[in-house]
Image (tube, rainbow, N blue to C red; front, side, top):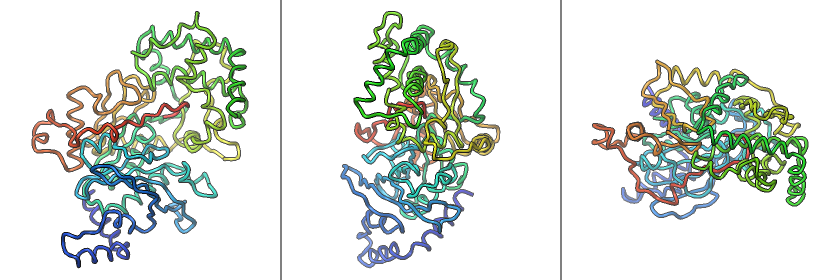
Length: 477
């Protein structure tokens, strides 16, 4: 079904874009079979595509591009905006990986893990409403998971004629969520999905899974040290908030969105334990100060290093307004209990509404995540979910039901929010690698016979293979 649909889809797109692209192809044919059109010319022949810049990289062509998208895919005649993307081109005969971070796109050459595993091309798309990929004026009602999935579908449809081999969708964290939502709404586009550390907050008001996670993660010694520092930061609220006020004044930080410095301070402190486990390992527990003997400076430095005191300033929040908007309208957000804080906490975990400017209206849609969860359980087909054992966001994971086909959920032992296939146990690592290559249509014969021998097809590259696990200073995936 997928193959037939994709063949028909490619034919429709080819007919629809015969203008500039067809002329280039005819000119190349006239010049002889060896004189094909340059890949940049082929890409820029796609209607609505424009070049920002090309950056040289050995063995590849790397382009930063804009693609014109409808503001509303349901009413495409009502305006467009330019959505930024990058293209790491290897060869049109190789498979293509469609990568999404769920946030801004990295405009430097990078390869996601599946791209290395299949030795393919990579298209990376910036999520709508993250600047500069934001309509002007911005109607925030057009920021939802279906519209974003439709952005991907439309771009895939345009590029499939140039890259006819198999396609995989992938992404980590909110990008893994994005890849999953794309599959839910357009299940015939991709040949497989690899979703890393993708949270699945099915019922927004039910967050007990996170409370259970924090009672057992890591070691008791480490948990106790973290809890003690977090508590001490609230015990010493007065002197540390004075330090925070000076810090904000020195850096020009303001607190209009969250309300005031006190709310921002507590939000940073309450993120402390979560952020540690999201980005650190048990081995890092030794860097946590002993709260009872720590100076104010040591408490400040530890909280700042792990949570970041700039996070809930207006300036720190501005970049991530689209995320908090989605968390408060569809994605949901965790609300965990922290009994060790007692009555020291004045606000608890604050809702996403507190982190979005008040002139942007928000209404939560409780059915959105339930729909995706139900669809994945019943319809997953060639989907792989990878989680980290010690990552808080994995406390509510996607799960595969009895009707799923060739789909898997795997957990990397001891791993945090940077969990990937390489960190899985040996047997699962080999199986995941073999499946990714099979879905991409490039599995070596030996790996098809025995997945234990499966290995990435591309040679390692220290620059391309950097993992873009940025330590973001807010409680978000």
